[in-house]
Image (cartoon, rainbow, N blue to C red; front, side):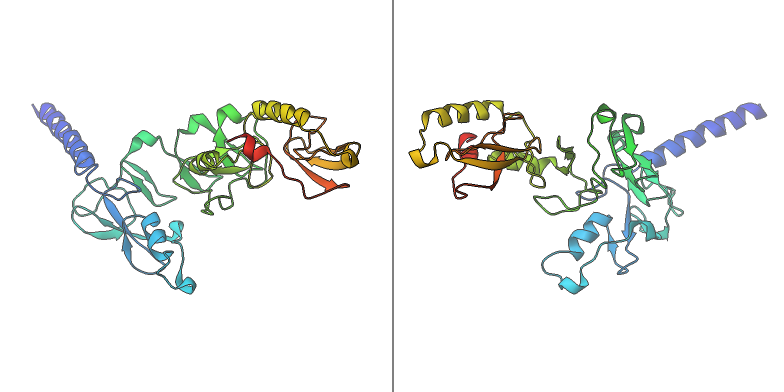
Length: 289
């Protein structure tokens, strides 16, 4: 009888633990995370739903530029339970009401999130938590960031590839909550920003100018236009030097007012470096519209 009583008590304990884990789950948080706690920012001693809420508030245009700042995530020492409003040291379970403040919890990043469908994991080399599952990513020591296993043998290393601002929106890429894409040249940007570039007929990397998608159809159209556009006699045999943005090779080619084709990779994504007229109009942007 005594053993049965202990088993029953243990069973009730499991039920209680589960109920506290689920209590309020999904009901609290902000636009960035679902979680059951808030943070006290050590930099300004104010309370926010998460570090992104702090950074958005403290870096807005209304704030004096000299007072703008980001919260140092690893320095966060205090959190406030969203259910009982108890302020306490950073931990997963509230010391007062016992509720789980985040189903996913990282003591290294002081990070909480109730949405575990993101398959979060902590990367010690990145120094932050990432999403997508530890088994699906690898850390590149030269790029100093995590990439999908699908890119392990094919990605182009760019030193500190994500440790910069997005070339379109100028937001810091490394710890962004937005989806990141890696261009064929190895440079990284927000996927949303790349899609906006495509809407404006921009198909080259804003950092190195290399084409990031298949442009063969555009090059075929330019072949046809070059062939159907005769040059003035004074320019018919004029040679110029070009640099190809796609393959990186320098070549001497016959000048044409429409566009200059790389003889190595057949791309028209080129720039004239010297020799001949330099004020010609490229038709690449017009052809992709």
